[in-house]
Structure formats: structure tokens, C-alpha cells
Image 1: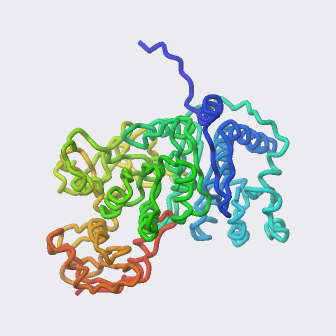
Image 2 (image 1 turned 60 degrees about the horizontal axis):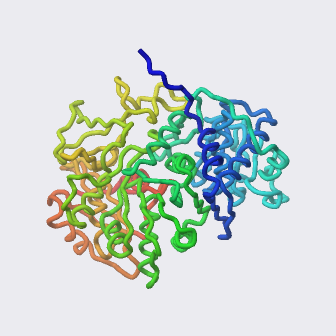
Image 3 (image 1 turned 45 degrees about the horizontal axis):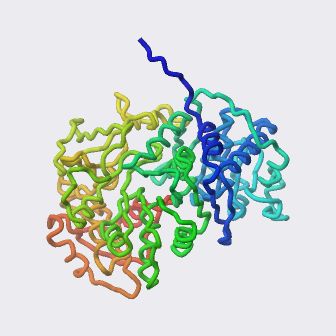
Length: 546
């Protein structure tokens, strides 16, 4: 017997219509490159998204056609998010920080027909002109005609338009199609730091369900009263689903644009009353350091923060809480899982813990949210015990987890029984909380045992002289690999190797302590703000620990 409930498809257009119809009082604030602000509402976003859809339909854009963006977090990007996907085309966000060859590869692989470019990135697009694929016919600058340089060389090869001219005069309502909810909605590529980028193709259904999941109390806890600022880029995994979650909740959005320096972010938080924000550790670490250097700077109303991408050092988490009253929730995810997988929210079992104990525990990536299942297996395929000690690779499955890569049907990313292999090496404790101890490709294999580079990095970040740190494995004739610690010291400090290594004593096993320390001016980062371990390994491939 089947239930007698109505069956309506889960569609992104329904989110937009809901927000416009029921939450007209919420604000959409968008920061320009010069720091000035543009203000809209959800009804205005819906009207402009409809105009964009009409303009694209008039140009012959069909369902399933890929429409690319090279853009920051602003209102025009939000309109593309909703307008393109709601009409049944595929919004393809691209990371402008990737190398030109990677961007060209991604455009060719996706076979995009239109490319929307932020005015601040037009010069970069010009440099790509000779590498752009034949499928690409039109480039749209996300602004007015004044934002297109008069001598722009792109004119000679592509139709070059301004977004405001494109949508001008178009109707402000669109009869959104009732799509199959499994229809593709957006496309995002992995960063490709260890090979060619791979496309992850999200569906209308997966996007809406993921948006619901993000709203949960133990996840982002977003409601209609919230003012939400996604610092995580809109080109990265749909800004962790925040633009859709905000629409479902009817929350206000503050879109920070290209300026993500601490002063600009602090100004937006204070002036716009931001209650929630999400970003990678480098963003929050820089903000904390800036606050400490600006005596008297506080938060009138401390926002809730979420960190993901890589682990946040306990010292940074503690600094925010104890000095500024800011609580940070640690979340984990991947491009392939939309990206939400787990959060480390408090449990009844944590009752009675003092702040220091929970701050130490909060470095872990948490427990799976409803909708995502975790499985952790060792090298022999056996599930590991939940003792916080045994290591294994994390595998996941769920309704917003990719079942294949775009244009790569034979990629061996899944197990025979359909679980996605994350490549993360984790432990699981008695509360079911995972802790990522390394990427499978980054774990240091020394004398038949594993050493977690992430654990060593997070610990040394508590040293008063350390600004940044990275640990990689280097060759050793006896032990196969040994840890090399690379440290960016804080300004004006020049700690000795002995001083740095002594900080590990009593915190890790002696054989975990790195054999060598090297002070460096900077560390390479990926386009999504993570340590670029592959680059470091290449640089130090000839280094030996003995």
C-alpha cells in the first residue's frame, strides 16, 4: 500500500518562489570591489533571475546546457544561481584562482556555451582567449556596458555582452518548468591538485535536500531572523549550499564580493548585523590575527562561525571563544558530497565538560548528519573499531553524494557496493565522532606505522612563534619516510628548531616528532585555501631524513 500524499518535485525554482513570496522583508546585500554596497530583496532577486532566464531562453539556451561563471559572491552571481538552474540549464561555477590551463580544460570538458565573468576578472579571461573551447560562443560581463573595456580583445572572437544589457526589458516573471527533480542543476569541478579536475554534477533534488539538511540546528542552524554571510566562495561547491538554504529559510544574505580581507569582513559583520558566517580556516585565522592587532575591536553581537575545508587549530578556536565570545562549529565535507557530511555539534554526553576539554574535542570533524552514512574500513576491508585509535579510509553514501564523475563513467572512486571513497584517513571514537588524521596520499608511513601530518600541523599551531605550518613525508633509508616540518614564523620571530620541536614533547609519541624543521616565508595554497601538499612534496622530493 502506498501513502496518499501529494508528490511534488523538489526544484530550485520552488525555493526562489518561496523566498520571494513569503520573505520579502529579508535583505540581500552585495559588496562591490570598491567596498560600496548594493541592496536588493528576495522578490527583486526573483525578478532579475526571471529576466535572465528569459534572455537566455531567447538566445536558444536549452535544458541541460552548461552556463559557466567566473565570479565572486555578489547579487548577480546569486541571480545566475537561481535563474539558470530554475530554467533547467546547468549552472557551472568555476574557480578563478585556478591556473589558466585548468580553467581552459574545465571549460572544454563541460562544453559551456556561455561564460559570465566578473568585471574584476575580465583581464584574466582575455589571457585565456586562445585556450577557450569552440563550444563557447558568448561572454557576459557581470555588470554594465561601462564594465567592458573599449579595447577588449574578446570582442574579436566572441559575442561580448553586459549582464545588465542582456536582461534589460525582459519580463520579471518566468513560467518555470516542472522539471524531473533528478534533472542536473549545477556543476562544480574538484581542484585537481593531484591530476585533472573532475566534474561533480548536482541535481535539483540533491540540491534541495542538501539545503534542508544545512538548516538543521546541529548544522548551520539558519532561520528567517538570521543574517547570513557566506565567505566560502560561490564558485566552491555552491557556497556549501548556503544560497539555497537561505532561500528556504527566508534569511537575509550578505555577499562580500572580492574583498575578503579581515577589515572588510569585520565591517560587514558589524554594519549588517551578520549572525552566521562560514569559511575556510585561513579566513578565520587572518580575522583573529587582525582583531588581536586592533585593540578595542570587538563584535557587538558575536556571530556564529562554521569552518570547513581543513581542520581549524584548537588555538584559533580557543582564541575566538575566550577573547571575542565567538563559537565555531567544525564541519566536514567534499565537492563530491555537495559538500555537507558531518558536524561536531555538542551531545548530551558532552555535558559537564569544561570549555578547554570541548575545545580540544572540537578539532574533530564530527558525526554524520541525517542523510549521509559513513563507513570506515582498514586496508583489508574490515570496519575499524570505534576506539579513537584505529585508522581507516572514510567511505560515504547518501542522496546528495555523487555516484559518478561528469564525463568519467569508469573512474574508480566508488566501491563495488556503491560507497564513495573519500581518500580521507580517519579514526572514530566511542561517540561516533570522526577525526581526519590525513589524506590517504599525505599520511606519513614510517617503519610500517602511520604518522598523521594533520595532527602535527594542528599541534604546532599552538606555538606562540608559529603563524603557519605544514608537515610532509621525506625519504628515509631505514624508515621509508620521516616527517619534515615547514614553519612560517610570526612577524619578528625566528624560533630555533629545538625550540619548535620541544613543543611536541609529551603531546605525541617520540617517534612522531619531525626529524627536521625548516623556516619558510610562505606556504603554497590551493585555489580553495588549503595547503598544497603536492607542490611541497615536489619541492622537497630530493630531501632525505637519513
